[in-house]
Length: 387
Length: 248
Image 1 (tube, each protein chain N blue to C red):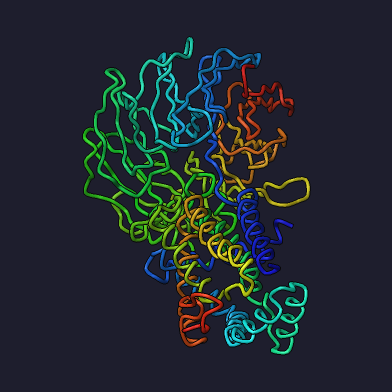
Image 2 (image 1 turned 180 degrees about the vertical axis):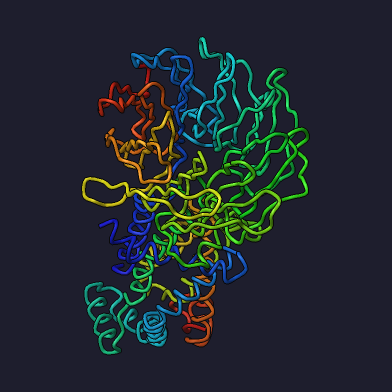
């Protein structure tokens, strides 16, 4: 009897332990980390509860919001019939529409909402269907919108007829990064270590592709005829289009998760080791680096891509600290750090800036406007609920 | 506390699992099986002690039945005599519990490692970046494929896997669990024998297939070890405490 009781106790302990293990470190639910987009006095973002929001950039007042949901999956679940979609993509505004991709348990959809009132004008696919979940921000080029999907395909939609131009063959198990469109070619990097070049017209693979022994963590950035992309081997790769070997590799301390920024022959690459590196785009020579630290002096990973406005380089680390650098007249020289401002919450999405204000959506589901001249948070609004 | 856990157990298991996957041709399923074998090898001293206890319990069955016949109507006296018998034989009837308890943190760490390594969401992939060692074979193994046989190792287990896990666990338990000497405890014993397999069958449907694969392989290794160390099927063929004894 005693053995039976102890066995029962062990079973209960087991059950409880496995359940408890979910909390501190099991699967993290997909919540999304949408960035912000500024357009004509309005800031657009995806919230952590699956809403597309439009906020007045000057006052921080909510203009409209639109919740995107998906069926919860049914079955014997006692949960709600519909759940909020996760939004990883940064909204893209073109004409009078804002485009957002979604990530749900069922898959993903691309939505186009009217910027005047947030009503959905079209969605792809229609009729309750889904494609693979969408993580990478779409790219607009000409009359098409290009995006990658977790089903491993790249899609091109016609923006005027809202129909599918093409979908590529399956290029990988899943595609989570944004494609880069240059001229009539679409470039996409894969988690399994390929850079594919597709015809922007038909989606057919072109003759050239690049293969690495390790997967690529970041989206590709094309500058002149070189592709810059971060790898799981802690290197930033520069690959000349058409070449089979990398032009150079630059070693960081961890992954280069965020897509780098390239300007005036210099690559600015934020790294998960908590540094931003300035690298000569042609030679791969490190020019300068800056360590982004928290109040305790620990380096904080950089998840978001840096942003360049006028001659100011803006960097936001994962802990929500905004660094502003004046690049000055000599782009090679280490810049002076002008301001350091904290918004007090983690940041993973990309951000936008306009006339001295940086718009950041944080992981507390708030939208912040940071005044980089005054070094303060100008306004902040919660994106949860009906505010 | 959580950081210490990750530093000592969580992250090492995660990295070893990913490295094994690279060594085994990119198969995450084979990596889980290899890790199971490694864990069973490391816990061999405890397992050996458990099996010795089981064998001793089997050998004691005739004496236990005699005690049952003699003191069947006096439960207190029966318990005292049984404990005396255990003591004389140097057997701890609860010895089988410890190997299971030792495996608890490994199960938890393995569950976390599977979910992190497979990076089923972008959040998990980003989190993975913070936990990987700078081993070349680790970086080359990312991303891992979650497919193994018919299973999605990152998704919940199916009924086939649940039956395999529950079935192998029942066989292993049946081989090692002595039947109740007291007929009044027999129903409780039967219930306990079923409870664990049912519980783990249920957990298989709730948790990642990768973890259930670990349970299934661990059970099979346990059955094989049990068979060869104790020299047979143990109590699996045992029918009643009032019959002649274990037939294994």
